Image (tube, rainbow, N blue to C red; front, side, top):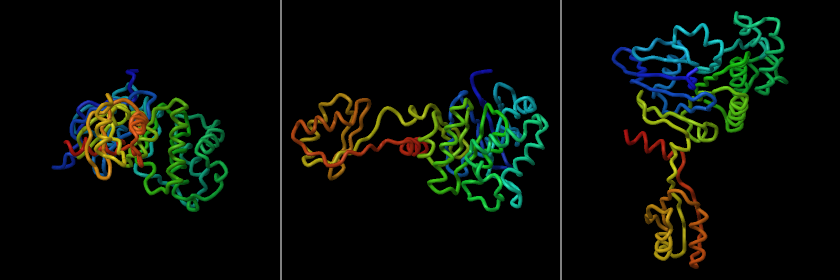
Length: 304
């Protein structure tokens, strides 16, 4: 093993005259929840399909769980669960019966353990009580969770989820996030593709940013957001507040943003700013942190 669950070098895919993925280098650490970020059409799904051996790359190489693809596919793919471009099940079958059919098609598992494994997978995604309900009666969130259950019918070292919360309401999105956390805590690496930045920020440890098929940036989510952050302060005396804030070591810049100030910090705590202002007799009406993954993402993409 290389210490990486997924590694690509110069990965490219061309469809006719369109270059969908352009020389992409990926390094997904084992044990991470790795966010795959980019707007729709940025090449995320095409990259995932190349990683899984579903699409042949035009150029470049892929290693999956330490094995070169596609040569290593017979050894590696049984250790990989994937949900790509939404679930597809028989609507007239129950959730459990759909999983029975899928499991029976997998010649690498012991059929004698099928019942126990199917029940365990349904339990992990919170669908054991609805196992006998027909798939057509499932909500969209239940369908997504059943798709994830299908990827967990056996122990997996890597789980690949392509936009698993598309079309879900906030409650259903939360259920999927909680499920991803549980899978990661059990020891699996998760590659989580999404264009919903707030979602990635909540559950991912690392991320890569793509735009128009090209690599933009990668690293831990903390590093991508950066130590620097903008804090908006609404105060009753802007001029006096500026003078106080200029004396705080963690403050890098101050800009007027009526009726307050936008303060760029590096290190330090927002509470330090508030304490200094209050000590100087300045009333602080509002304190708002501005720097989030969305800010970092937009800055990175717009800078390309």
